[in-house]
Image (tube, rainbow, N blue to C red; front, side, top):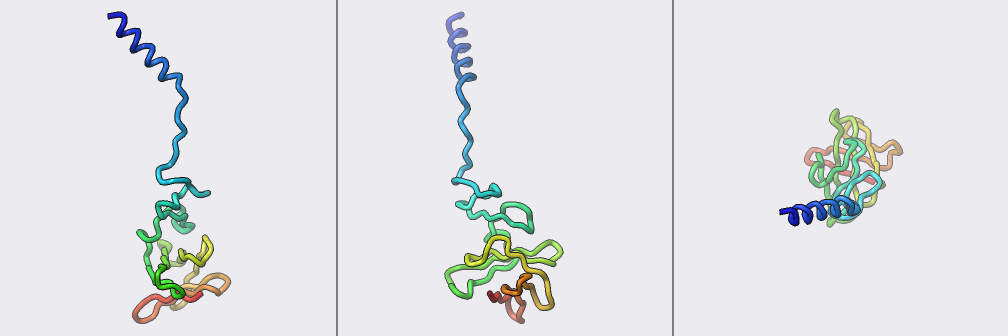
Length: 122
């Protein structure tokens, strides 16, 4: 009876002394915001969290320069701003509301509502 107890105690003591494995995020490395790019996550400055733009986009458009790519747009809760996720635009591309759509502060990116759909010009 004493032998099984000693074996169990020794095993427990050895396991308690073993170094803990460093936890690594499933799916690869994270970016500076803690998002998993390999899982399709990007940091949303409007939402202040990691998102998968293709799942949460309020507007999805075909990339004008390349029909095999998409442009995703997330609107702020009050619809005063729009964040654009596109392959050829930098992170944190935020557009402000104007009559007929949204425009970037430098006026280089414009998202406008037509009668039938949204259009983006860069």
